[in-house]
Length: 86
Image (cartoon, rainbow, N blue to C red):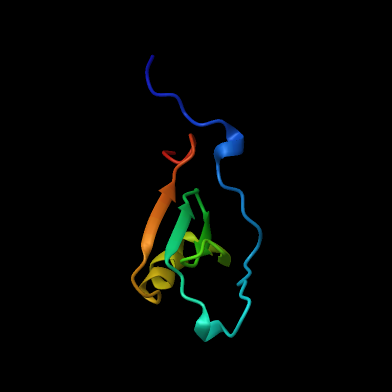
């Protein structure tokens, strides 16, 4: 059996632009970013070292580079659903 594309529920679907934190924003350190690739709008999901969600954001294609250049170094994972190659 060959490779099969993930089903729709496995593709990331995140909310609108929000930053979530339980303390002062300076105390929050994003350690891992998940990036869902799409045609025009990308979804970004950031967690801290404990796995707590600290960032949810929608980015337009032209804003992705600016956003990532402003982040401190962290691990980045990309999700490419079956339509991401178009």
